[in-house]
Image: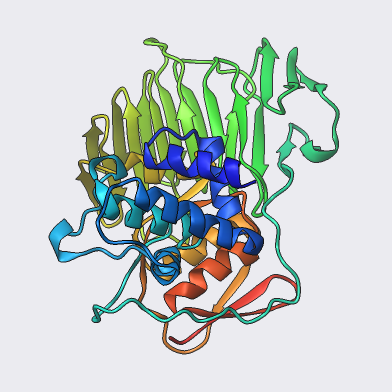
Length: 391
């Protein structure tokens, strides 16, 4: 175990770690039985920097518990690990790996000293991350296909169109149709991400608590679908048939592109983020044109933001939570969808800000134990009801 831990930590320092290895390291950092081994790995890495000052057990422990806070010298920005040298590089890496085993960062509010660690109230039971996909497809006539209980192969036939579940769990449509027949793919809270290939070859991924309504075959001069929640699209290029994604009065029009759209009702605004190609966003009489790396924020109007953190936007599809100055409500909204939680607040809401990433493969207890280091208190009751207490 020590050799594997050391290997992963060194890969992390060198920015040469795969997403799977990063998740493995995150999990190992959370195991209580491996804390001494991790401390030794940190000490070994420190010694290899050639620093004159020896690192003590206390210092190694401090690095293990420290959560990397934004400093004045960084101007509010985190410097990539690969650009740091010596003990600073080790210190930051140690904080990244161990702060909750998941690279969570806490920016202290109105104080310079790091917060004291406060243990989470003991939970009656842990909540595992989604183990399966519990999505459903509502086909014409109202019949519901429960995807977690069907076998691979043809699930239904509608006007010569086959609904197929592939070996990898993806849903696909094959065949032809003479009229518009609509299906709805629904992915509930507490369910793994699901993806589907539409009849034109376009692909859509649905986050938990989301749905997409679409024709089994696109007929006419446009390809139109509607969504709730959050979805990522990779649209097949077809100059003769623009692809339209709608939510209420909002219309997003593309020819062939990759973009993410977040329309959750409990968010402050709707957000469309473009990764590739071009997108026209229109709501009522207002419209805007996006270039790659830009995001349209739709509230009382359409505001276009450049230099968006695309990694944060796409984290849900890549098996991560990525926070960037997220407050407690932001964090808990995402956790609630993934773990299917009923979140309540008692008194004043803690003012902590979070910046970093968390693996979605972790259990709720592991996440909450990490968040406890930020002086946030939780209690939890049966039925997945969680209450956040005042700071």
